[in-house]
Length: 73
Image 1 (tube, rainbow, N blue to C red):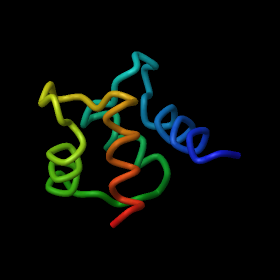
Image 2 (cartoon, helix red, strand yellow):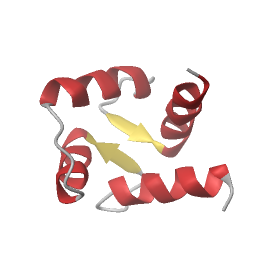
Image 3 (tube, rainbow, N blue to C red):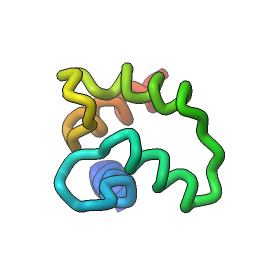
């Protein structure tokens, strides 16, 4: 599976209502459902980095950009 497919699959797992956007609530719910513990501060930090247009949601393109930045770090 290519990196783009991995990114798209990860995005789909987080986009619970399938509207093409990930909200903070969806992110929290998806992580909790996976058994991951994540704080509101951690989510806020992720969204501060990934939500580049500051609309309160992460689009697939924003998610892809954030994923790429994280892999390069």
